Image (cartoon, rainbow, N blue to C red; front, top):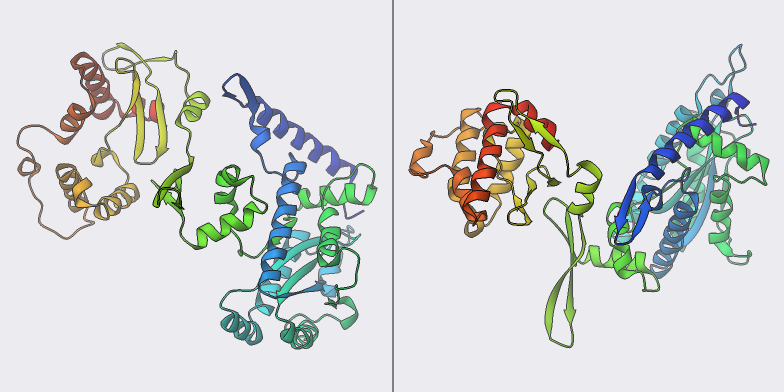
Length: 444
């Protein structure tokens, strides 16, 4: 069924088992409790319950969002023309299912971009809201189910355009019987939500249903996404990070979406921190609350062991490997044992790759001058001129600071203990000027 063989099942089961073993072996400490990476994994194959719960939440949230806009659900089915169903002499499909799925996506996008939908977008002030689900025929050829949310006055006109568009031999060339268009969900049990969930549920593995069992292997084998929707609500990359702060609200997804649209969720420091701006009615002031921040301690535990050492090639001296936390490309912290805290590592312009240097210079350019180290900015600008990225006069670095370099100046700001400063300076010097390979090995 669906073109899935017993060999396919064995290969896929083995692949999933190896992935599950690896993910469950990645343990993280949360106080006295240990959790594996599997608990934080949103995967239809490895953690289907978590994935399904999130998807169900997204579907209900989009329905509620569309309902508030007074939009009506329209369900349509698009099948592939006969050329996608042909087999070769070995009984295999000439067109691979994932290629057919891509073709279905392209034709769907073209249809939803016709003049009628552009007019609707201009009238409503937002793009089309929709769901899409791929489902295999028994032969393994996919077809597409989509639910669109449109104004009631547009439904019949869209229906007319739908059948005309997909039966056009030049555009798609299907026969009318292979297409479907429904819009009367008002009296059906469970309504439109139950209707779309019937198709979504089929995409998950079910030990009690042989057809659904084989369908789940079909999605994996051909690398076809189960469920897609319009970018109507908050991006999942943001929602998954901050959802627990708003978990007690009746519909947290819609609330987070509203906050993002109102710019109340601020992304800071290259998306390593998300802040929530809200008005406190008791104090009469605006509060700036950090709702998510990249966990540097978690990075350290997962990437570097604290008892490791290294030896530099040129002097054979042994050093204790420093604990380094990576927040972003240009923000790295090293643990100073004397001070018992993490301190910021300086960025060395001459060691950056071209694209890194350009990105870093743009960041400094947009930084408030009152918060900017002008000496460091001058060094970065000279490096840009040196590599030919800026057409400007080169300024001797000594004119920025005639006494000490930026790195030494920076270190004097973050170290109060002289011995700790000297130890760190020696290690940093070794990394930066004498053994770049070792530096990469430790810091990457």
